[in-house]
Image (cartoon, rainbow, N blue to C red; front, side, top):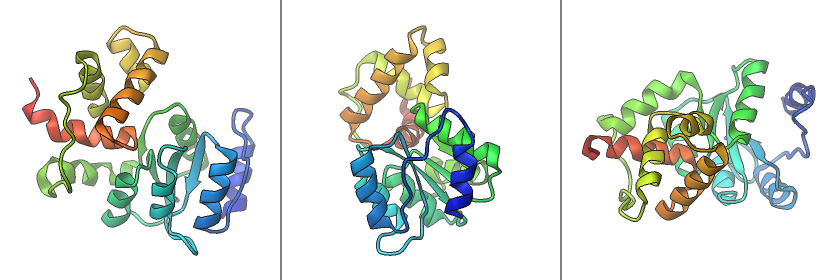
Length: 200
């Protein structure tokens, strides 16, 4: 499976595969050493599972989960651990390449097969776990960016909507994640959905 993925990704000029790991512990060690833009992580691996490995890499690199399993426990576990995206292995080659590019740009991505279930869960079908972060420390602009993230807009789309440079958008996203103690923009999107009924 890894060899096939490498062939797919290395066939594109804008993507370079810098390492491969056979288990979770090795994946974490290599990612900390190589600092890639994106780590493509399986959920089930020897020695350290993909959820724990993703948590260990929070703040170091963006993780895109790739798995055959779309069970809620894996989806929610991956996102709580800070994954930037969740993709099923039945995704075609073009979809996989585009997903890597999306996450590398700093945007989040969730497989369409699980998006509806995820939205339902975080809109009330399943109660959120843990306290909701305090958003009072955000600037008005950061609140606008958070609302856009909650609507599923990419950095480029937010930049157009709020009439600012994409680089500025990335800065706002990074700052609001830090202020809210979130690991990824996907978590920010979930938070924005949870807060949306209370927003003006």
